[in-house]
Amino acid sequence: MTILVKKLRPDALLPRAGSAQAAGYDLHACMDAPVVIPPHGTVKVGTGLAIAVPEGWFGAIFARSGLAAKQGLRPANCVGVCDSDYRGEYIIALHNDLDTPCSVSPGDRIAQLVILPCAAAEFAEADALPDTARGAGGFGSTGR
Image (spheres, rainbow, N blue to C red):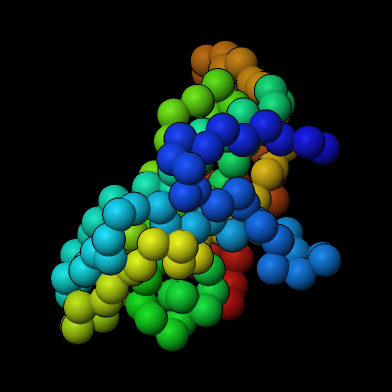
């Protein structure tokens, strides 16, 4: 699959896989100067990219595991959803989970993009739903 990417700034870096079998593609910070994210604060960081995800797919924005575990930085919404018809800049709202400030510099890897299929659906109101073994069991109802 080839995905078209438009650089909105000349210094923007295209998404890159960290290894041959990586599911996610690193997204890089694209800004003029480093930014500081205060403790338990959130800052929007641009990637300088617009991405044309094909119809029937979407771009899922996930945390980079090392960045989240070692530096306490993750997407504020945990998982971002970029629809196939969105053509604006991919911006990551980075949240700092630590009690100390964190900085992000131009070119830093700040999140990862995974391209996933998306099924189109129509919703129909119903008076009843088909029974299942689980039924209406909610949080923790299936055991540990």
